[in-house]
Length: 86
Image (cartoon, rainbow, N blue to C red; front, side, top):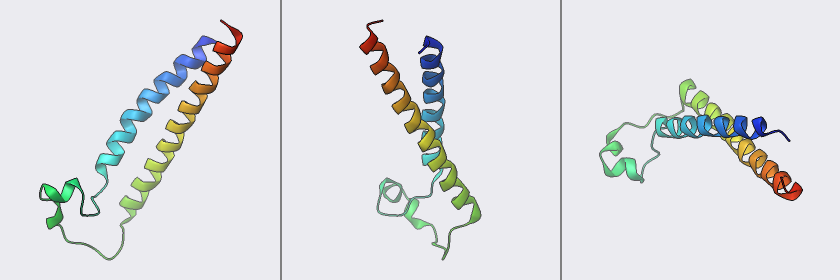
């Protein structure tokens, strides 16, 4: 495979890593974790999730799948390149 494929996957991996970190930090804490230690446990709990939270969950899962695919793609590319001795 050409080298531009690896560079494309690396750039996509860096972008999705930063985006995944930001998306995870946007999630509301469920309690009992680090967020409740620093005063995050004072919020009121609602009966259901809002549409924005459901969309945030979907985006996080989607970006996580793309991130995982980049990891697998880079691993396969590296295995092919090492196997051919180039």
